Length: 265
Image (cartoon, rainbow, N blue to C red; front, top):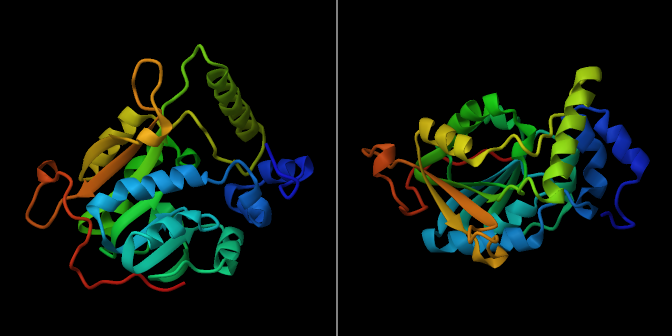
């Protein structure tokens, strides 16, 4: 699973016994050499799917890690791109990368549950971070994202179809979640990472309750399951434009006209 440049078992064990923030600080220098980094194929598919609703002015990569998603935003946004994460170590690695060509790039250390932005972005994306949020935290998280978007702005993230109970992957993830619950019951601080806590139906309802209009789009690059359902979907949640209710928003334009800009790092 790991390349020779990736973390050792000892390093992973130390990370797993740390808090989420400190654990990622420790993992940051080798994060891009682990399976935890979002594959380029997923990043490219999301960028391709969002092209038809762009271009956008300002974009935000929520829980940006070492900045792979920022490179996606740089192909879609004209003015600026911001990566936000609460791990200082991950942001240090992100800042050391060669910035992508095009819009200005900023890095901000902040908790996604307390985003320091108001009507600052036209597009927010996130990749692989939602296992770090408990289900009860999602309404507040989505409300913060809603507030960070300009009217008509879009919040997009990919979701993999859950494995079926008949598959080995289902039992592997179930075992991982059980191990994490035991770990958090006997060790502090907790390390929140639950692969099976992000359920699409609950997520959609929480997004709609936050004021978004939600659509699901299959990402055809990843094919279909045996029953014909897509293996990977893109969730697109749109904040209503001024004067519209959430139910009245379809797949409107991604760019807003407000002049508010995100702060620099």
